[in-house]
Image 1 (cartoon, rainbow, N blue to C red):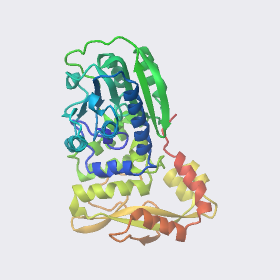
Image 2: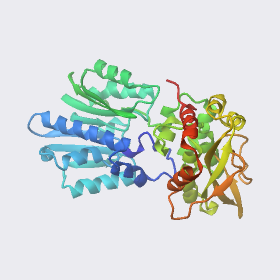
Image 3: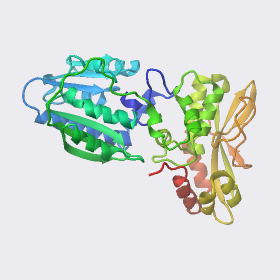
Length: 415
């Protein structure tokens, strides 16, 4: 479940349908991406842990291992690769297949990729106590009480002197100070704590006495983005959960994206939008279009960009007084993204930027920006590149800067 970290998660019961695992993992190909920076820090800690371990056989386990890029990537070239027997536990079948293929290609015969529920202690029988435990992409997708529970049970997974490498996002409310305290209470010494914004990577050494692994132990419940949204009102959070149901209807899917509060997340990506539960018209429609195309191909979604003038009163009605204050008295030329879709053989406008009266599944959701001039990227054109070109041609960057800064504060999770 590595790729199911703070952007798109799945559980045994829930999967955010339409989210492309290959595209998610392609973020690792961008050396500047937050995931790549985090991966480099994790791999460095794995390599250092192996280097300082005593000579002889070593055991490693990875909880929610995903494609195993962290451990397999290090073992492929590490001088101690043949000393390590590893068990990677992962639920997603495609990720399991990918990890197995990677281990086989690297000749890592001692790496076992187990297709199973990583939340159950039984998944680690025969592989613990381990000298290296990886908790990467897990702690940001479970409840606070389950994070504490996992750390408390680590002495049942660790050999004396074992290293635990873990990751966690640092979005408000930042749980990492409490996680570090829980490690100390469980008998661990901190080796490092590093930032790869918006993530943190920690490594702790087990200085206590191992305990037997209890039978039928449940370490956590993987709840995905529900772990990140405690600041949202229950009704809005319930609507968003449709994103995690592969059987949700077209109306439920549209209403789930509309339920995301309006705001500019950091980073301004689908990952950032889902992690912070806020998004702009650009992000929401870029996210929704491929899901509709895959789940409901008859809708034939097309992205449209509208150039319009935003005045203060309209900004106040749409985004609130703080954003309105950032709009010049004469207004500002802005860009808005929405979709054109086919419903019952009719082409309609579909704008999910903001919530409102529930969609009836048939009628149009008109662009909330009001009238303007529309431009549609061609089928082989990158929509974001098309949007940037329009911005360069039609918008005053200096006049828009305060507006974008205000939108970055809108819908922000509380500290």
